[in-house]
Length: 91
Image: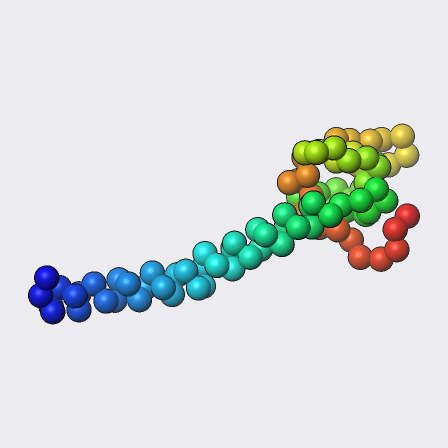
């Protein structure tokens, strides 16, 4: 390969590096943080689902969570459907 071909690939290589640090790496970090949050769920935690429903964790399985969303209303959702754990004292 000649020096001109190498210089032609340099901008492409630099764009890849910029994309890695601005797009891919932050996404991986966010994904790991979400996985850590989901795996640390406990009974009594107040959570928000990805659909926007607020609920109280009443039971846990390996891949699902039971939520109480109203009096006498309980649902079972995938752990990945939990988008946030609300701050504050547990109920």
